Amino acid sequence: MMSLKEIIRRDETMRQIEKNYIKFSHYDLVEKFELVNRSLFAINLGLCGFDPRVAYDILKLERAGYWKILLSYKSRGKELLYLLPERYANIISDLDIALINSGIRKYKIIRTIRKCDETRLWYDHKSYTWDLEIFV
Image (cartoon, rainbow, N blue to C red; front, side, top):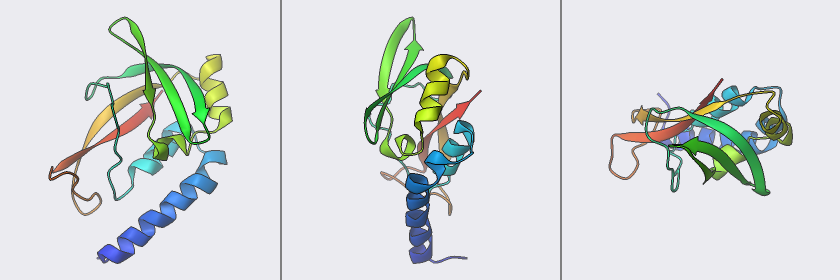
């Protein structure tokens, strides 16, 4: 079993890999999100309007800054925007954005629940955290 210090060091290494490698890699967007979700620390999803375990169609992505991406989705007949957390925005390349916006690839996004254990630290005194998953 790894010590907490080793686990944290591994998580920091993973963050560097996300910024420098995963973004421009051959990985599909689904695989990229899975890699981010393996993180030891929970990611603050901010003002996430996604209902848990409900799939939303991604209509388009728009880069709003170097590490900021606005995700457009439809909920209850309205088109809404969501600012992706930085850890997720880090891994999305311009090619991924172009594929989604052109309609070549259709993705859905879902907010999932993840139980805390030795692979995910507790956050805000809760035994679960939230992740975002993308699927075709």
